[in-house]
Image 1 (cartoon, one colour):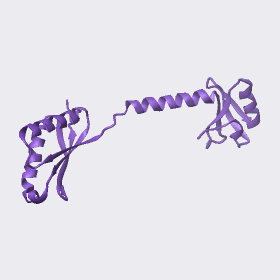
Image 2 (cartoon, helix red, strand yellow; image 1 turned 90 degrees about the vertical axis):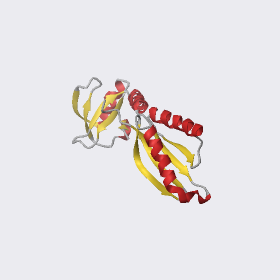
Image 3 (cartoon, helix red, strand yellow; image 1 turned 120 degrees about the horizontal axis):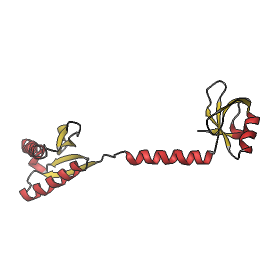
Length: 170
């Protein structure tokens, strides 16, 4: 939150010119008049200093550049998603390979993958088979991914999370 012109309630301020040179300590009214004569605004940049520091600048242009910088910084951030792939205990080999290709693609794109094995009815008695399926998936993607959270059983689902291998090593 920036205070500018009449919003500044301090009696005196240390004024900095457009080009960064210090003008000195002036009464706030006089500083605002000086800024207005130049067609600019007086903006409080360090309100906690003694006396507070105010700069003569084009406030609209300053806010525009600040927004532009924030937009650029946001653009450079890599947003990581958690993709999900569900398996059944009795999965055909072709279906397994198709889902495995999807998991590999998600990991290559830099996303985490939550792999779930769903048990229906009495299948829950064969939890070790679900664990074997998850272990097989981990082995098949071990070149590009690593386990982030070990397999857990929640209700009738067993799931684990795989993350892309970090690129720092080489």
